[in-house]
Image (cartoon, rainbow over all chains, first blue to last red; front, side, top):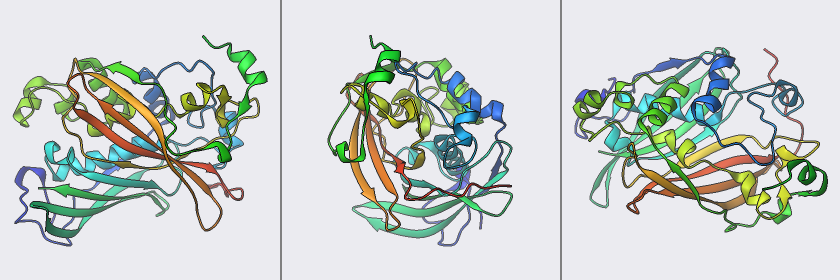
Length: 149
Length: 174
């Protein structure tokens, strides 16, 4: 079963249930806009940035520019919002790992599954695993989430 | 005010050996606005109206538009370079021969309260831990905790970076 935020309840969730999936692709302009839109602080001592400085990124460990990992985390939380109310997500613990670089124009599919359901300390908790997979079928990000309901 | 050119020439680069859990930065203060909430949502390609429209937010049970949970990365940014700069050192990305220390992952803890327009967030960054993987890669976790003007904790996360690879990572070629 695919769970939805509009009809979620602890009782209705079962281990093995899926979250709705989403697809995300960022252009290089989208990646550049992260800094612009968020009015990032000017650093007193400038630093190189492997998201927007092509020459620097080419010499780095990823061999080219990559997206912001925090944006990937944002996509995973957007996925959570399709399945759970925002007030519950604010109470969640989220442990996310970047496993492969994400480039501009990669197409990433984010999916999630319920892997546990328990009562602990008077709270109803749901355990989830989220995965981001690129167009080459590589896992680019994973997350373990525990959310109270 | 730091003379950036002089610092780049004369300051040393912070090293792995100098990374000590508990070291913290000066507090950082940032005010949240309707515009910054909307712009953050745009920056992560999220068009959920709860971030743009008061009525939509109230229909979802919120008092007003609220910041997305991951907006913490902008109102309480990591600012790891400041930990080093405050002590007269450069981060590896700031060196004359720079190298990256990329994002490896993040652990986000529960919020005591949502972030709303008008909130003033004060955050600090500290070194939470450092560790080495079996393969010899070196990692550092920075903990960022932010409170609003009422003393409520609005963000608490650990931002993990790869400080140094044990060997050159093979780049994806396609």
